[in-house]
Length: 411
Image (cartoon, rainbow, N blue to C red; front, side, top):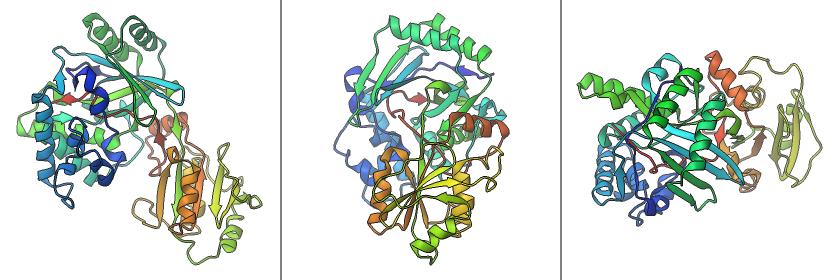
């Protein structure tokens, strides 16, 4: 069963919450983060502390992690961030385009991560893990929330909704991207104990939706601190926000390729017809896939609808994924792009950017073709994680995303 814990969150004073809150550190690049350098409350000073150091610095150098700790300490000393005196849970509602999802910020068990109660569906990269390990060990803070999903439990939902109805929100603002962020602090001990018990009795497993590297780093920091003899109970958990599956939305994660391996556009389209039914050219009428095994192709100024032919894919949890079909039947078979993790001939575009971004990349000449995919479902994600399999890279894009800096877990 899922073991969660309340904790003494480090969080902004109410009037500064919107100014502190930032997008997750790994969805912005250095240049985008540096635009906030002169905003003293912005949490990029902690999560992307290289913005306060000379341009060109190695972002994985110890100097960057030391600067993160210096900036975090400054924000505490200046009263920008204040730690709760008692362990709490934090209810977090996100609203995007009128659709709301409400989760619970808590500590999730490292033991659950290691023994498979917290289920994974992606490989992690050692370099990215080590970056977060160094950041956590230096700052003694887990600043990035891991996004978990679980099969909805009515008792948990009712308790959360009852608390929201009976209490004013501690933070409530709309960020610059139009996404609403509302947080309620659950500080009543009886309610806290009830939430802990409900998860222990009702929730058999949680699933990493977004944040595999953050989760892996939290687990490995515990190992390191135990080896050093400096671990305490706080290091047995890492900070998560757990959402019911009925409220989670996965967006498409699309692909663009730099070249067609010497083929002309016409030759490439003809080659696709072995595995797909290909429509007539649709001009600039964008085609967004409406069902599994459909794709949109943008090439040479035209959109095409591709429908996968029966018998060209397997029906196992991985083989049936559209990203797998695209990888096997197009990227590998036709373009000799065998490892999308390392091959720089393919790039990935999150669905939040829209199909216009695919057109832009191709029309600019930087890419030869773009593929729009149908989103993976949360049930597909659960099936793969339950089977112990691993999804192809860049299969899922979750929106909306939690903001860093609103609740920090100190270890």
